[in-house]
Structure formats: C-alpha cells, structure tokens
Length: 111
Image (cartoon, rainbow, N blue to C red):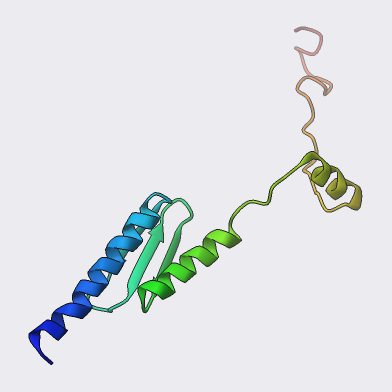
C-alpha cells in the first residue's frame, strides 16, 4: 500500500467521527473511536446507555433505533380515558390524607 492509501481510511474515519459528534452531541451523546478496537462508541449519560459499532453507519443505526424506541408516546385525554376504561392504566392507590386517622395517647384530644 502506498502512503496516500494509508492516510485515506484515517481521514475518512476522522470525517465520519466529526460528523457523528456534530449530529449527536446536541442530543446528549458522546461519540468516540477506539483506536485499539477499531470500533465506534457512543454513550448517553442521561439514559445510561453505551453503544458500539464496527462502522460509523452501524453505530448511527443503533443510536437511531434506540432513540425511536425510547420516545414517549403522545398522550391525550381521550387516550387516558380509553386506557382507564379498558383497565390498561394502572395507577397506584391514593395516599390517605394526613390527619384522617384516629389519634391515640395523651395528645388525642388536642391539636
């Protein structure tokens, strides 16, 4: 291989890495390339996720897939009513209001 051929893969990976960083940094991702492993890595600290891929395209596909699966579903009032009627919405029991229980002891009659 010639010297120019050796530089091209590094330059291409540097451009891909720079593009990935520019796109995903705004979404909370940290992207890097492991020179020892040759893999691309991405971490999202808020979601506590670490992803890796053998190529920039593979890593990008994994990030997009994860972001699509973790997006919240749009919630509307009719959606909640329908879920409540079908029993799909399980809410925790309401806590008892303070002061509603019968007090015992020497301070029972005082406030």
